[in-house]
Length: 243
Image (cartoon, rainbow, N blue to C red):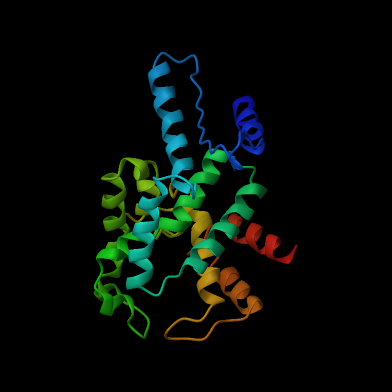
């Protein structure tokens, strides 16, 4: 907590570069070594470095951000996903994350997951992605979490969110895919994303249907609470929407 507070202070202190009108861009990460024998300084340094690279991916001024931009540009071109959708998801996820008092590291992972959860769709046939009707399992769409997982696993900067990409279509009742994870076995960021992604999809036009009203979408979330969605995340998100 102390280290995160120091990082926050540094990030909020805009350091000017003399005679340039520019501010220094910094990406920082931290991790802790505890007293357990299995814990090592090397492991803590690796974790801190991973968190720093996550920040670099989210920094518009970083050359590493071009990796994310290229992947997203391909996704937006091929599918009905949009940059606006990704940004709304990030805002919704952060609102829940702040309420849960998640660390800045978890918030960074939420941002990357909101932006890149559907990246596996880049390898799905465009005719399927743009099909003007509800998709079925036969449409190969259920393969995209595994494809996205492999992309992230093969990309050092995205390795830390590969498991989250793999798990983002799991359901609270265990009837999701690809592994049929259930309840709290599903990573928390994925449970947050499931609620916010569905809400945003329902409240915006899709090729095969018009947008619902916010009240209608909230009722759908309540209807599927405890089956598709984590009930606690549904309740918290509705509370945020109504605040």
